[in-house]
Image 1: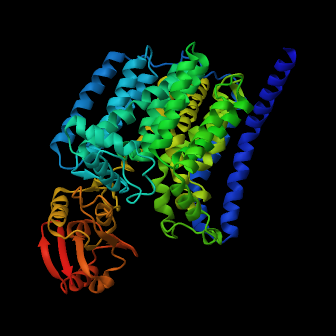
Image 2 (image 1 turned 180 degrees about the vertical axis):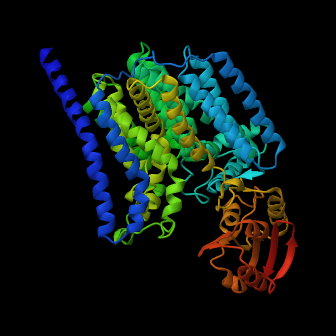
Image 3 (image 1 turned 45 degrees about the vertical axis):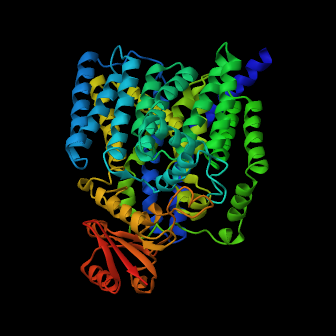
Amino acid sequence: MRSYDFKFITKDNKLHSFALALPLLILLTVASGFLLAFAIDKPDYAIRGLATGLPAILASFFLVMIYHKGDIDLSSSSNTLVINQRTLMLLFGIFFNVSILILLLTPIRPWYYFVLILILYSLIFTQIFSKDANALMILSEIMLLMSCVICGMTLKYPLYFGWTDILPHLFAAKITYLSGHTIPLDYSLGYANFPLYHILVAESSYLLGLDLKNALFLIAIPIYVILIVFIYKFFNLATRNSQMSLLTCLIYSVTSVVILYGAYVVTRTVAYVGFFMMIYLTYKGHSDNNKAVYRSLAILLSVFVILAHQVSISQMAILMLFLLVCERIAGNKKYLSTNFFLLVNVTFIGYWFYVAYSFTRDLIESHIRPEHFETPVVRASVQSGNEWSFLSANIDSSIFLFFALIGIGYILWNENKKYARVFSLFALSTLVLYTPNPIQLLWQSMDLFRFDRFMLMLAPFMSFVMSAGIFASLYYLISKNLKIRSAFMIILVLFSIFSFYAIISNAEDSNYFGSTTNRKYFIEEELIGYDHVSGHVPFGSTLHSDYETSRYFIQRKFNESDALELPYYSSYMISAYDGIPEYKGYILIREKQFLDTKLAFEEGAYFPTSENQIQLYTYLQRNNKIYSNTAVDLYHNS
């Protein structure tokens, strides 16, 4: 017994020493990054690095001051605001109902809608730090607010498509709905053996009596929002700190990637929900008397994740390995089982190679081509000249990193023998997958191996360390004889700025914030035009259009297309406007989208300058216009 205690104390001392060295390591890392940017003659990379470099430097100095103070206790609940909870809940109810009315009465989300949402988040934040906070009410408010924000993106507009993956998934669900079986291999090699998402959408449409689109968005909200409860129970189970767990849920709900995927509930999003529930059940199974029940449910959910999305499980296995290692390094409890981790890996690898071999072979062949690794390829979106706009677009990431590094450093330094150290070490080891950094500049990492998809999976853990950083910062300010209300207002302002930029990063439908991106939904007139194409253009025809439209008409012919009376086309994205006269078949132009913002062609964005308008219409007039409405023009060239 003494031997074990000695080992544990030694391990704590090492983590404590590492935490003390962390500010210096942060400064050295930031300095090295800036020097490297100038060494390779890329000063724009150095400017981009300010988004993480500045908050990291500030956090390191703040950590040093906290270390010198030495008597901050995150488990303390004495430093709370004396505010009437009923007043805060009443204000929340009033503002929430007003926000719903705004969604119902306005054609697009106006600027004052976002202001109301920001006020609602601030009210919940205040409740968490108030005396006698009601956890059940706060969780209910967070879920209601998340639902409101998601509905404002999905149910308000005729067809929200996000990054366009929703469009082919809806068609795959339609095949399942009409045929009564999963999609065949000759239609989709990638999803034929991973059918649960399409079955879920098809069954929901059938049971609710709704079209596939509305069924998807209606069931997506409870599936996604209910995760708030599991996040709260998960961190409260491991840390026994209800207040910090509530703040973790609030931060999670307002994080930009979480808001985005709340509306963009595609296969990987559903798999992520299953993954986090699986992790929770694994932890719960360790601490509950009904271990067999929880572990069985965790195994069942691992199978669900495998069958919901093909490649997510491999990324989740990597994160589970990180978490397992961090637990062995920093934890005095062992919630994660090595046997369970091995079971998940054996199950998905066995399924990939024995059932979904065609998919696995295609995946491996497409990812190990030598030409992919000949030289690092910088992503097309990373261009010299847009580095300053990059900084303004990542203000929320900067505020997150400031608090997250404080939280990580503080927990490693002071939370001896507490499981929070595991989450802190895990967050530190995976920060490179979550925050802006050089890895995100490369096509190989972000597009080929899809490192961007790690962000959603890491969001709960990153929210936790940010919440720890907020508590540590608040208690430090109070310890410096600053009045609790003044200290709270400083933190509230920073949280509000974080929330504001996270919210408006998903506000492409509003013109009030200077968004230059295309809207992520089709308007009614566009859908009417697309229905005309489906009803009058012969199946199998060639269609040329912008990127979003080409994704709408992604339907391909398969063995049952004619039997199910499903349309199919050869749909291509227009490479460049000057190639239009050479195209044979049908050309579909979203004129309203072009005049409002731009069209996405293969060579890049095509903006509605006077010269571009004249050139485009000159080329189009050489074809026969066979259909037109206020948003869509259809041409034919034989």
